[in-house]
Image (cartoon, rainbow, N blue to C red; front, side):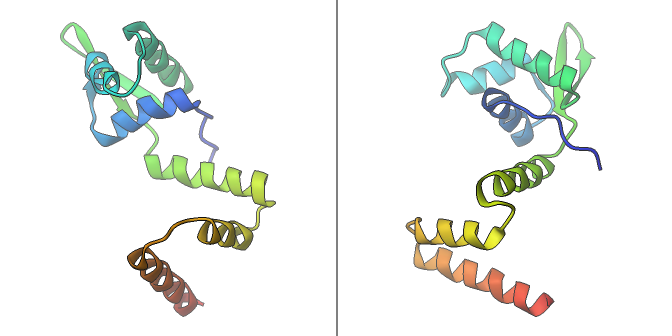
Length: 126
């Protein structure tokens, strides 16, 4: 499998909107992001264009507008970005990463129970 093209933090914002619901017009994306980002319309349109050029988004004409949809699923990006992060910050070792996050997070009892359940399932797979 080829690596996904890298995307910037701003491009992640746009992709998150489209991963939540697609297809969407540029104006739909602009309206959704307007609530939390202070970007001009042209900024969002530039980001959409860059993502299309990277092959991360596709579009199709719909009357006098374009409908944008992701080409690459969110889970694939999460998987690859997580691996890159673990390699870069923790030398590719997952145990130190997990220990760091567990020790430095305020986990609720339910979250701890969920982690325990996941670890128990992993143990059973071995």
